[in-house]
Image 1 (cartoon, rainbow, N blue to C red):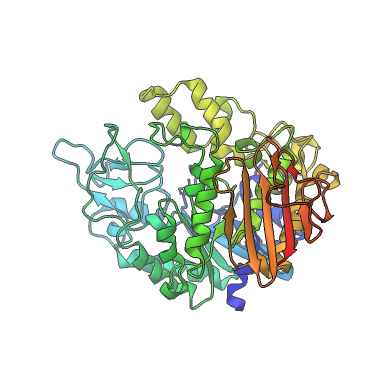
Image 2: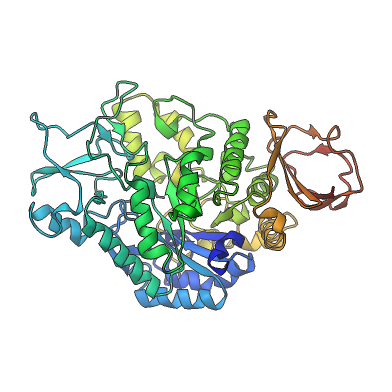
Length: 561
Ligand code: NOJ
């Protein structure tokens, strides 16, 4: 069971660039993380996932890697990372690194060699195709960052494939040398103490070798390439398991953009020996207008019924067949109180209500830096954003396609842009929020004097103290692990209620995800057999008392049955 430590764990995600700058260059670094280990430990978490720290031109904030074995000097040195691993292990914190092997940076030596000719060792490390007769791209596949997924290379006189930025050429997983090279780099980090992997867009590594055009439903020129899992995906992932994960007992959580719960069941079923968990995207689309022509920028109010259906579907599908990875925030997602809650009047309540929903489900919860203090989206102007996805998408939808006005784009960016989560961590109310003594690489959220770690910990309404309690509940109660799950009030658009039962014990998790009051009394009368274990209002002890839920109220209740 020891090798399944992650089933009892809560994992804290660090975006190193924005976590803590220790050397005054405005850029977060490894020594900054070491400095904050006691704080991370104080939350009660069990492991840290580090976003990419490897050498990178930072076109996509480190997801464009130029050297898999070397730490980028702006974060420190390899020695600094080994030091961090040792210090974390001393505190019983495991270290999860990011494995980014759908593609590399175009500055990676492999790519530079691959460009040189069609017959060297690295020629087939990437996906090269000739131009069509008229010189155009081999098919209509589109990049996630807008435009074609093919880029012409003068040197080689061919197109190469890139699912994301043109500076991120996709690796050719059909080539056994590529697979070997990936296993090698995983062995390298295992030997240095890394405990597991978060695998970037791992479900996209296999490509349909017929390279067919994708159906263009709205007549668009390019259609985002990776809308399906590729044909050899399971096989390649199983190879990774056989070569690295199983023999070295490394934990794995795969990013699975196109996967439904039915695919996940295959990816994480222990019998199939692929992954431990996957990150679904489905629940993050509850505020995306279905059928919109502007991708993620066609935003609508969050559909809570959809949220309940999706999370329940994953709970039910994976029961006895695998394990869920639970998250609302990460470096690609906005801040929950601003996105789906109320980040002013009910910032504490809405942050903790969503946290309650998530942390009591079956699965391993992930907490993204700043989520635990209820950080909010910044009020940026267009020119303040820097994410490559946002800038390329702005160009596509506002300037070229003209299907979105600049004002509507900005409105959507305020809600869902990835940069919302990438502003520097707010440690205190000192200059630059205590993140750095120098000008930070990215604008600080102006609300830092009000929202920061020091202030939160001293507050009566402390989001982080609520997280500490949630994490402790999970650690101490088997009922929050792999027992039953039953959704109640499925059709109610505002409240999320579910029950979990273990033997004679029933826990009911109740969260009002709105500002409407909700009367629970028909279902839960004031009842001394019901014990309130946790709540984000003053409602502790026995009995539900007043059964009217207050705005964004959340409760964890226990009852003997
Ligand atoms: C997923 C990562 O989380 C995201 O930040 C990145 O842009 C894409 N993969 C491409 O690598």
